[in-house]
Image (cartoon, rainbow, N blue to C red; front, side, top):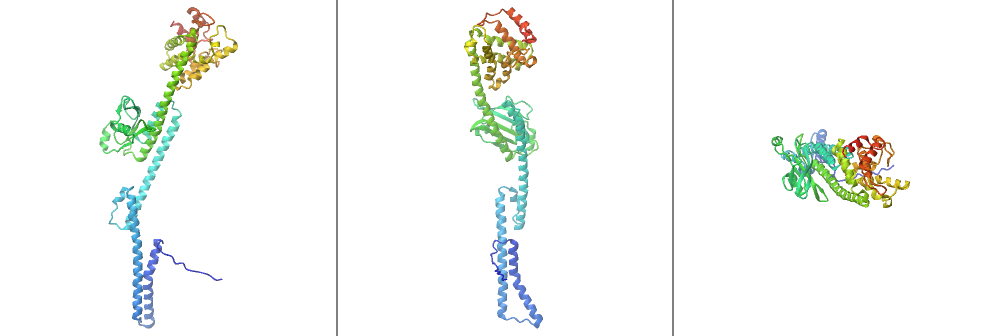
Length: 478
């Protein structure tokens, strides 16, 4: 079998340093070694060294040429190491300031070693910072995810945002300020970490740190320069300070600021990025709440107009809403209900018949008794009323009272047939007051009853239709 072996000669230009130095060492040392062996062999065999002058010149030339080639190759390799070291140092100086402290008098290998040591250290620091940022982001997201579902108003949501921002950044204080467009001032919406309340604090746009941020719509980071001074001061917006704008479609909504570090030091770029992202999302939430509030105001005005329209349709019930509201407030106060519930009872009284807008005049103004089918239709007015007010978030607490103000204690009321304690106190109050005013008012099918007769009817059905405490409270006020 014939073997075709052809040695392949290639350039050592791109070879590894070990291979380069190996080849260059052979070039520099092999020929002198061969000459030395030749001379020793002649002396051993013949006792003399017999080399012609021409051979001597050739050997000297070859030895010199080999040394020159080896020197040139090694110098070229070392020069490349110098260039790599210099370029690496210049590039990394921009992001690693400590590299500037490496002494230029050191040899290139030492400089390169120290450069890579600094790079390694810097990478380790970056990894630690990234890990810390990751943990911070995870903390923020987990807190928002666990808390946002339980938040019913924008205020509680903003309190959650400022709380987790302060904790996540290890800050001492945090404050979220919104813009008063009319006066061009920032006012405090929520704050965390302050001993005293900041409800009266206002900052003109352009003044102090947050004011500057509001005017320029740019984030502001002020490092802590004098630690002792910072510890002595008990003021707002002391360094280290991060202040970022809340903007929505380039419209300024407010400013979010955090200041102080419980563990010392300053805020970094990663923390500025986190606060900026939170501010961006918070601005969207605030603006959406404003839009929803405007829509609710419009809808509420429409509902109020509907309530007036209902009363205007029926000449016999004019003034009914005002009287029911007045009686309901007196009873609620007599029973010692809290202010919020008293307000709910009052508002529900003013809107309890709004569902009659969906009942035809043929039924609503019928001069005689209603048929069974007509009665079923009339009974739907409380359900219609609830459906009308339900979309308004601030009226959500009225839904139960409006829906159930015709429920009776024995379960024979409508629309859900609730019994006893299943009926809320607000619905019980409205049930009694609505019935009393209906009995003492003219209706298409009968004349108004006297107050004494109406009182007797209420007492007759105590415990059956009406709550005893509510009836007693009403009768004691009229």
